[in-house]
Image (tube, rainbow, N blue to C red; front, side, top):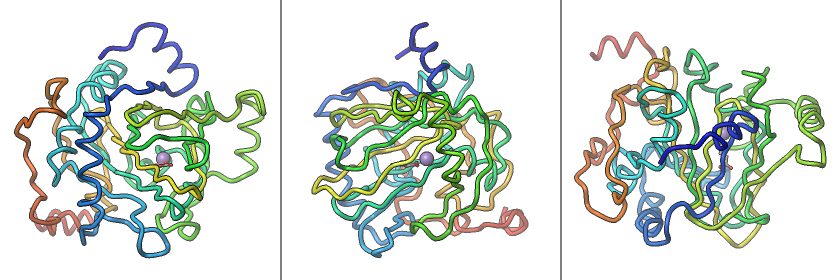
Length: 290
Ligand code: SIN
Ligand code: MN
């Protein structure tokens, strides 16, 4: 899948592209069928909400689940980003966000690049999020909200919020958000919220300011996020565990377009558990282990 000139211009202006229903229901089913098994696992990659029960986010399933390993090499997700960056990509982060019915907590206003810069020393924002909805996303189940055009501002000042949810995040303060929304059009388009059926895909710039509310509806809002980084822009620090910020910068090789429906062989290196080296968070210790 390649982006045409109009899509590229729109991405440059808004900082995101939305592709409603890009993946068919039979393709999505191969993924949704796998989620309960992954969420039931007792592994550190399952980060739970403050209630200690519902999975907020599952990390790195592409290393221990065949359907998600295939998704992580899907040309519909990888090719448009390769096209925009003009180089090969590696997987910086892979997550399946639960946003479970009644229990799914907020994601505060932030830019992903804020965290990747502050925690991981990623040199530039040449990294992209590509998300697929595994459930329908509607106005009730905590859809993503974007401030269009905010990606143009680069990395904004952010504070490390360790308390609002169960997951630490570099977040942007309310005054700055109010100003950004006003500048982007206020009530006339200053916040947008792509919604659509399961199988829809969103591509968004790593500096695009975004958030989502909690999910008080009776409908789950499970979505998968691939955070794809240009290989030359790999992170320079390994302060976070490897299942959150990957340290393998091998370029992603895509599979054929029907890879969700056919059992193409894939490596599952973490199938037997998280390697001890992935839990190490100091460069010195990592060097000693090498
Ligand atoms: C994120 O910002 O990484 C996740 C937001 C969401 O899933 O609503
Ligand atoms: Mn984010």
